[in-house]
Length: 375
Image 1 (spheres, rainbow, N blue to C red):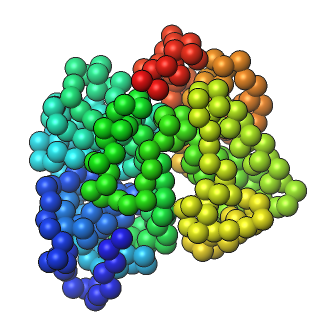
Image 2: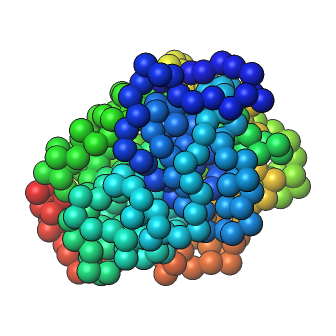
């Protein structure tokens, strides 16, 4: 990882020792997009942003760079900021989707007219089956020849009031996947241009369940919903569970594992996952959470209407529940979290979330899905 430490008021180019590669596009204007833009610019890439909100795009364009602090420090130049998905697609062969995961189909539709043979789409936090959603959406738009793969968001970061991005932590490891095993093998070298420490998943199910955020966010939100609704200040990961209540998280993980095994794979246990992410060791998942350095500055949201519920329920728990039912598995914890989130937020996630049909898997049996993902 390139780290520049310099006067934040000074706009600098990437080190001259690094070659300048092709233009790279990023869809998004939030935490993940800003930290990713800083990383890619530091590596010497010409970074283009597609931000759908005109006012936000105008503000970023006026600055002309991303100011980063923490694990990345410096002012990293941007090549262009546009509100046109077609313009971004026509300017860049490789595009990162760093937007909310529940917007993937909409983003794919915005990009589709500019996409074609040779384009590469990398989902930067796909949740469960994000690459399947985008691949299916592009097929529905008549777009062929585009490689689609996903990994997790690798930066723990927060936008600050001065529009800088505070990069609090960088994951050392993660899985990546394309819709099928053969495509995953073919797409591996794409990610090696931008990141080290990534490994291929067995299939999108394994990548989807090997995601500590998807496991912990919704349940932690619900266990602490009264504190969050009162806007109490507490450390989300370090103080969200006690030695007694962490059994809920462990039960949720056992259901994740059961679904994974039904589709020919397994998950990396949460305790080991945090160690691979951040080098955090502990006797059990609770102690491991409390030992993650950047979790010691991760405060809880101040509203229950938050992406920790909407995205992780809609884009991981809903497809997990559907896959479990196809495999005749009982998932009581997953079911309970989906039901509670639906009542709390007034949304039918089984209808609005990531259904098997939206993933291009509608009408298939569990065996047929296993066969397709493994092909």
